[in-house]
Length: 516
Image (spheres, rainbow, N blue to C red):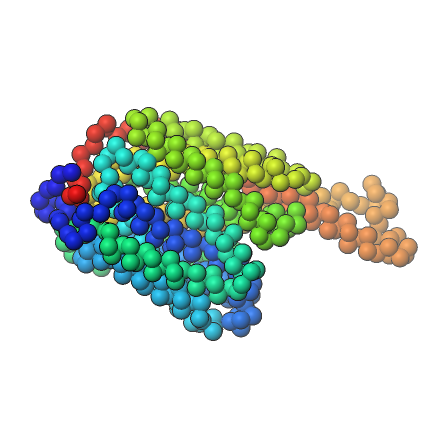
């Protein structure tokens, strides 16, 4: 591999410069998987935390909200901090702080402590996945970016799927505290391995854009809070949610104007004007929407409507992860052999849309097979999207922008997931109410004389009314799930025309590598 002058943003020799690309990939995979897994692993443990922390039902969700908001605020700092203190140094500090905060979360005795420690955990872990992606783009030549991104994507994309499974198993088998304490051994391994293997590229120093960071942090934090609190507070009927969305719109609009008009902004103007990078950010937001929303809906669906226990419900999600891993490996090989990434993206969105449409055909009385098959093919579709999308989005970006681009990329994936959960749950509740009203309106004493509540009460069969209402509730919820899955299928297929905005990268893009 060749190197360039530091002024060009090239890497210089370091003590760990001899580490192989495979070793670097494994190190950053471990770190990325550990942090992204934690974004969902605590979800199933919330009911168990509530009595231990003396928390109310409406306040225990701050355990999740604090992590998400802290991650959203810290992520945009990745590029500036990596140039300021060094990419390797930032990675090591992030792993150490994340591991320490995880232990503190496991030892927390009050809700206040847990929220504080989760904020520290989210802020520390925010840098690890973007730095990992930047490392992969540096240490592998362009023709190997596809396979490398496939391996790294296993941790990024499969982590949210495995989170509820592992969290449910740890909570049921041991204690909810092990959801956090399990990070200790893996954090120590990751830190030790990273200290020995990761190189330290020399990056061009730049000033800190305080105005840009403040605007972006305000906008992202307000958006995350609004999305998370909206469902509890009935969305725009609440002044708190109106204020949060107003601040989000104002902050993000002002940030966009600032970034486009200010040289050296915290998000470089070149990043916002690169067509592939900008389109890739739009697509990754949708991928986060589809991945996280489905991850949130399906486990609840199979437990409430089909009676599966927590661990079994998590196991039904595994085929999606298997399909995703298989598709990522295949996509990595195809990208490396010169197959047009846009064709794989088209296939991925098409398969994902078909799988979601298959989920809209679920029946209240069915076995596990429909969950397995539709989940597997949805995983295949998402896996075919992730690798070529990364290849296209980063193909034309110089080395100095990779950490920034990776940070914004990961941030938008998380934002997409938050939007997905909020909209999916809101649509689910609305459609459940609508369907319940329609179904219940059709059960009267005029078309079903035996269903007259007064007659049933007089006959001493008042419990039948409760049974009828329970059946209506179950059918209404099933119809609502079908409507949500169908809407997500249409959304996935509607993205296909936007593929025309993407440009195929040149066969041999110029890139600066770290020295062997």
